[in-house]
Amino acid sequence: MADTSIIPADEAQLAEAIRAADGPLSLTGGGTRGMAPEGRILSLEGLTGIVDYVPAALTLIAKAGTPLAEVNAALAQERQRLAFEPPDWRAALETTGDPTIGGIVAANLSGPRAVTAATPRDHLLGLRFVDGGGTVVKSGGRVMKNVTGLDLARLVCGSRGRLGAITEVALKVLPMPEATATLAAHGLDAQQAVTAMSAALATPWEVTGAARTPDGTTYLRIEGFAESVAYRQERLLAHLGKGWEISESDPWPGIRDIRGLGQGELWLLRCRPSDAAGLVVRAGAERSLMDLGGARLVLAVAPGTDLRASLPGVPAVRVGRPDAAPESPGVARLSAGLKARFDPRGLFGDH
Image (cartoon, rainbow, N blue to C red):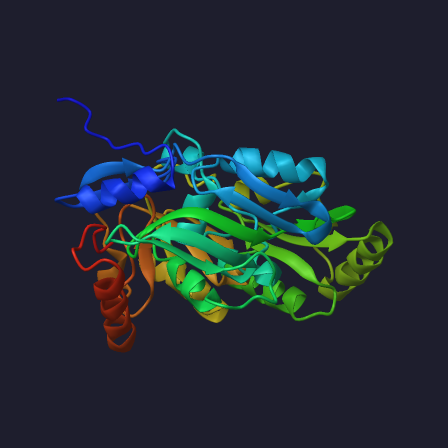
């Protein structure tokens, strides 16, 4: 079968393709997460490049199809970063392609630093997107003070392409830390790990990562100026007691990218940390990754397992599928209203 993918070279061509569409469209960027819905492929890979980057102002504007690696490389030259620690799930999902900055914003994806740095939505200054009528919409601006339309930008962020195709994003960036320290404890069970992570996050020592990996190791991260990190590291070790040590390895890329879960179907759950250990047991998970102090779980379960059925009321999403957790009636009504406004022809699916 001939490839019927549409690959616009710029925003104008994208808008024209959407106006001309006579059926469902499947928006894709790097295609790394396997989450595209059914429909004719409309790829944003042609919309690439950093439009503007002002290190002194801590702002970056990039087209949606720009590879995440390109953005990270440009920031690294100025010792800056995307503070929300965007993940790369290719190894976990056995996919190819390149993660894009637009895909990260569309899915509102973040890593372990979300315990303090939140998500892309909280660093989003503005964006441009093309709605289901082929209209180009600009929301927000270059600086955080300019809040005109910012709420609309935040609605589009995390909408997974349901409201339109993001073409450009403006983000706040932050300096890289001068130093990083990671503390590790081996052999804590899930409940002990949650208790320890909660205790660490409740201290004034500014923990920027708290996770338990599938091999049963619990990690805590501290970042900042070297002198401050050294001081806080010692205070945190004293606070936690025996069993903790300074880790010589860097586990955070693997935690960020949900690696180490092996074979099986992956589900992502959000919960209260106090519920995390019990959910791992109730899910019958073969392996588990706890992040954000236990507030975010990634579970590897037997193929065909439906965690929504076995864990009613728990927000659960199959990783690597065009899937979303069920919404409450009020949120569902709001979502339906937005969908009718921005995609009245239903081009972008309902994933």
